[in-house]
Amino acid sequence: MKTVFMGTPEFAVPCLRYLAESSHEVAAVFTQPDKPKGRGYKLIPTPVKTAALEYDIPVYQPLSLRKGEDAEEALRTLRETAPDLIVVTAYGQILPKEILELPKYKCINIHASLLPKYRGAAPINHCLLSGEEETGVTSMLMGEGLDTGDMLVKKAVKIGENENYEELYARLSELGAEVLGETLTQIENGTLAPEKQDDALSCYSPMIRKEMSALDFSKPAREIHNTIRGVTGFTMLGGKRLKIYKSVILPDRTAPDAENGEIIGTDDFSVKCGDGKLIAFTDIQLEGSRRMETQAFLRGRKLTKGDILG
Image 1: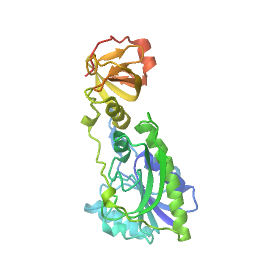
Image 2: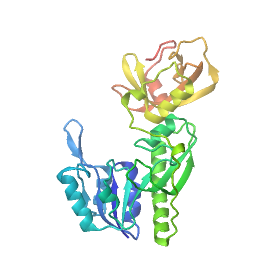
Image 3: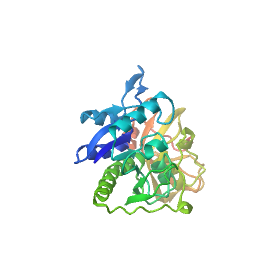
Image 4: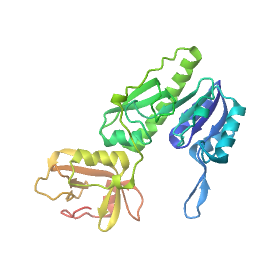
């Protein structure tokens, strides 16, 4: 099959690599424009563009697929390419009807949730924020609605109790390639059985906002833990911003008489939460320092028991 791949972040790279190393032809890759980064504002290619160039696949980076000269040029390119199938994985742009209906086998999307739950831009984050114990990847036929198309192939995985966004993101990106492979096999064999989504079971996962990372220690330990897992938490320590990438709940220890956000353990960086339970930070970064495991941090800095975070 002649395919066109559309994707942007690291999450989409395993799917592109699967396609590029399969028997299917990848005639073109569409990805978001390069973005300036760092002090020199040097233009940095997207991870998908970097991977596509390794395979000598033509890369297109229109600003928009829906309006303007870029959109017109993109549509011309796709019509000239005449793909049998368009595969979309975390592209970051909405496809217009003209593109959705262009390929013989339509457009399929590889989505990082067990649809119809967690439609939208940030399914992995919201899955962790909600404390889900299971998630997965779903392939679906794309329509004009947001992640509302018929489901094709679905694979589920259990979520670790302390697994954070980075870890789950990496696992689901590899699972996405498996789902894509099975979907393509079923297309070739004519065995696809599209299943309509039950809108009554759906929920939406909008873009993450920075303020969602702020830790409120009046909340229960589980909610604080899930915030850290889902969006990387932050608080203040000694007037400096402290990022927390990983944490664990200490179920056998409580401090009911301590203040919320009070440092209880100076040897494990444990802190009292609103329900009296303790949470310990295990992977952190203090403003002006590098990210490190907490035990390494504590070898270079002493905490004061009774200090209040926030």
